[in-house]
Length: 422
Image (cartoon, rainbow, N blue to C red; front, side, top):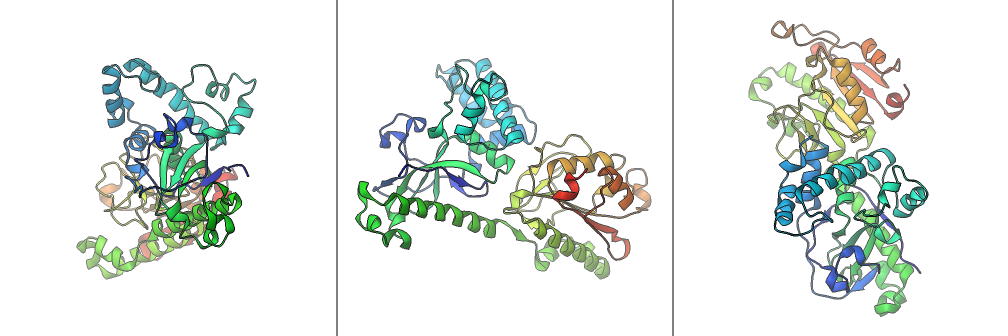
């Protein structure tokens, strides 16, 4: 039975690895074309999370925050190698390195953003006879090879953790864009992991091990394990704020007015209900605008001009003023955007900010008052009505709009259908 292509969700933890391609008879992981090998060796362990590595952090800085490559640690590290006479990704000078990043890497990001993450054979098929967008990935001199054996490559260690082996640019982009199905090849599975899987040890192939193992049973174990990692990451990475956490995170001055404090908690609870409807699988699929230290999802990403409102343990903090357009966020990057009593402060660009929210998220949860009459902020703030929101969304009203007590305003929710109907 031939080795198969699997899929992982962007939320699944993947770790750096100290395992080398030389252990598998090749100079580089890109040359390894034998998959689903059972390895018997000392424990492999696991390094830092892929997202903590310099490549992911560089891509995050460039594609999400709009920084230059030269500002990233990853670029500076590789530049030192180039200046020392080394060849990096077929580049021998700083300018060649910059041209490669601003050309091939940006083109790769845009291709995945627009077309999704295609399997290598699908890219090759589209590139045949095409000198345009997909043709560039098979041109002479392109630093990577497009083919069935060139999917992102991972291994499974003795603990069942996924180890990164090859395809770091594509994996970084896929995680940044929130790709739900990332095609991968599994190069190896540690035998110690297999021996703890009942569906493996119960098969004849599993009992015998070695080269005559049951390929179908092995593939079933791998596929089941990858699916379980998605479920585990979803449970671990989407945790909604509790009342006790809300109390701790709210400044004491705001808690002194018990009625106002209770009303704030009520609209946070309502927002949580709508976010749950969107079914984000990880906290990184939620973007909150100026959460003021009290996000509805613990660990969510935030858009905040100073970073002062980012909660402890928050995800990516986009240090960006919402009034400065466009936002440094990819199209439909987030499952849901949450803006609780923020839009009244985005005058006079509320319409433009709403359109940005619609661009970057597939669902929106918003709390905003129809009128805003706080004297010190007359010149910078204004209420937003449901009629205005409907007009800005091409005449399509929110999926749900409901009045909240007192001065809070209304809560509005748009699902994917409402945002895509205009």
